Length: 540
Image (cartoon, rainbow, N blue to C red; front, side):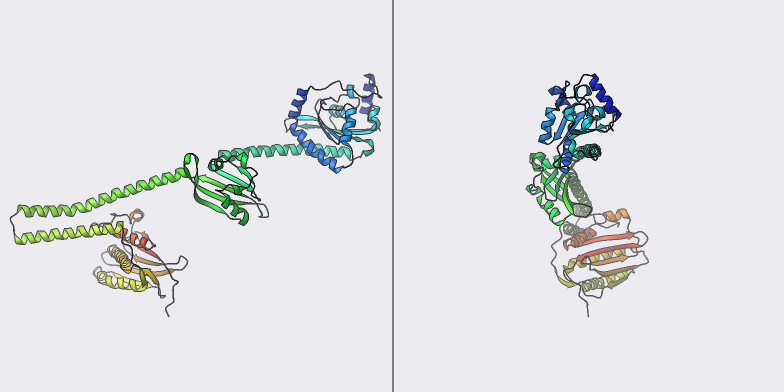
């Protein structure tokens, strides 16, 4: 049954003087520049319509179909269809730029869909012109408010023999899909713009490659480092970027993860930049590698600042050393010069002269010892390493220190592991360290005496052995701990402050380390760690 609005349209066509047996004549046509402007405005809609039209024609293979896009005034902006039906449409005056309006083209789906704002279909004799009685036409209006406010129609024409009741629902679904696709494309485009801005405004250099190694992102800092333009490398293999190919290859082929690797890379003007490099795999939900991500972070300024700080600290240390040496040498030199002046002014007296010379000699001996200690601290002699049983070295040192322990009213105990530890050391230097640490422990004791324990413990996990010297003396403050190994720092009234510096340098020359644990309530513990060249043997 013919819809009432179709009958009303035909009646208006007759009243307008249209002849049903004559071909329609479009009197309204866009100029070329107007058509180009509209094509530009609807460019995204045209692209999406072509995409879905191609899918529709493939789905309805063998069916002659013409799909047309118009604006809100009914002007044809673009159409898509196979060659045969395009020729038939051209004979009916259907071309880009013409306007589908009732008074020119008779009863048609485009004008009706725009007027009634609803999907419309015209089958055979529903058309006013007899030339269209063998066709079936369908039209769906659209209003893409979220996509620039585009309005218009999408229509489809085929032969009446190919009409299907599913044709109009298919076209409705196609228009809905077009809108979703356009929204998605705009979101993706905006996201791509945002990503591009992010990639090129951050201070990091970034390369992204797909699972085949093809470069899909390459930002400005990487351009600067590689001296290659983004547009030249997008789509090419990341293996052509020599600086980063080994890292990306390891990520793509083996799933390697590289984090915070410091490297030096070329920069502009023949300069170099210090960077931290990360290279990690990009994986999907199934943990399959689908690409690789590499970034570099420029830390050149930070590195230069660190070097300046180190240099400043070196000069500061040199200044402190110079001041310490000057202070320690000035006092005995003053005494020496004073006594020599007395000898020059007084009449010769054998007893007085001998006594003064003895004092001068002792002061000079102290000076010699101080200079020797300073030289040893600054540059200790290379250790003459031989294999020793460490327990024997410690026991010999303890036996040597026992008499001093008795004088200090201190108890000196040992707790040495049963397994013999064979180690390559300079025994005399290690004994010097132990003697110095034990003497410090004695001096930290209260006047009533105390206990000093020497413990030997193997550390299998670290492949080293630890010697700890613990006392129950007055302890050391946290501030003092931070300076305890600095030359000329001492907590003793008459101390020179080189002993622990010498210990530190000796242990360092043995590729070991020394650290301290202390508080003012429970005393102090020095821990010396020395590397092991052999596995620990059990003593049977």
